[in-house]
Image 1 (cartoon, rainbow, N blue to C red):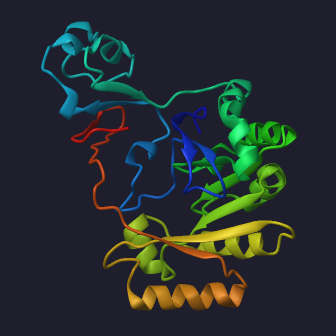
Image 2 (spheres, rainbow, N blue to C red):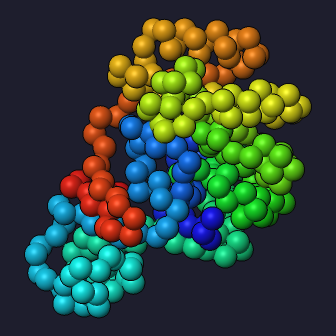
Amino acid sequence: MSRPLVFRIRRFSLDDGPGIRTVAFFKGCPLECAWCHNPEGKAPEAQLLIQDSRCIQCGECERVCPREASQPCSVCGRCFEACPPGARSLCGVHHPVQELVQILLKDRMFFGSSNGGVTFSGGEPTLHMEYVADVAKCLQESGVHVALETCGHFSWEAFRTRLLPFVDLVLYDLKLLNSAEHLQYTGVGNEIILENLLRLRREKGLRITMRTPLIPGITDTPANLSNLRHFLHQAGLNDHRLLPFNPYLPAFQIQGAEPCRSTSTMP
């Protein structure tokens, strides 16, 4: 796995755990969800994000680009530095551990007054187990509540011994209970995800919030929701949130080191 890259830091979030939170989004994900709302977070490598709606066709990007037309983008950064309207930006930045900790602690005063904290999201943060654990440890030592959003597809032993000790809350995504359907719509079966969830359930003192995105015709079917409810009830997991589907999402084209294109304005 390449070095950990953060593609977004969202401050004052109210949807990623209790209270006011700062969320760090990591690049790289083992799933290929058909409805992914963070497609720029799928690949672990840095990429170039192009927002066509901001482009003024000035040609500055072509003027400074060092590559030949037939060569793939190396994400050197020259074009987004030269772009007058800011239509190009780097998707994925590496921060040394202490640097990221200081960024995440900027809103510490709001965490305390709202019972908030920091949430690691993605992509999939467990792809960067050692790095995220180091950051989480520093945050906990500073008295900050730490939450982790995960798809559940990770190495259990590495997670349990390295990262779990520094996590207060796990926001666990469970999309489809039928493994064949899970494979069809996310690119992987759900056996590892279910096994990890049941193991996690046995950990004492850990709060787990289950989350299911309501994707029309896929995850929101009566059969899937009924099966999920029965499975979670049997497992003793009663904190289950249904997340509404957002149809107004930016469309990206991401191919290796090629640019990520968006036809709508990003925040």
